[in-house]
Image 1: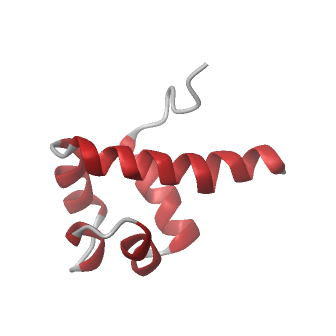
Image 2: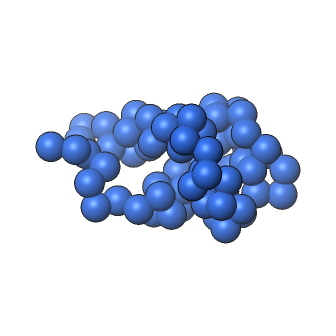
Length: 72
């Protein structure tokens, strides 16, 4: 079963921002939409057209959010 099934990209970004903050996300995934004037809207626009960056965000979500929820 795909652990990302049913989770939107927007939901991933919002949960990661709540957990890590934009600054730490920009450190972990060094892309400009997280570093310079970050917003959910600009991040969605960039990540939807940049597969390698989306893959990194999905991996970060799996490591930081999904695994954390499993441990609880």
